[in-house]
Amino acid sequence: MQTINCLEILEYASYLGMDVEDKDLLWIAKGGLKSILLEGWRPCRTTSGEIYYFNFRTGESMQGNSYDKRYREFYRKEKAKKDFNTKLEYEMNVNYSIM
Image (cartoon, rainbow, N blue to C red):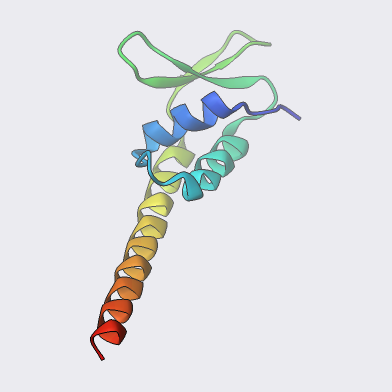
């Protein structure tokens, strides 16, 4: 099993469009990397900043994968839930402090 380092997680999180302040949602990026990194595959970056996957055992490379879109959408949904809950908590605190 391959280990995933923090830099790879942060780069993939950025690639998914995750906000820097969403450290509590980095598990999504880590899960995405784990699901796509078959034995020997690693994420790499082109000089223009695009992510591709390279298999150091076989020398093969591929652009993107079907998991990227899935995890990008999953992040958006989790972010929306988090933002909604934060707003709800704020409104409840404001309403109680007025009473």
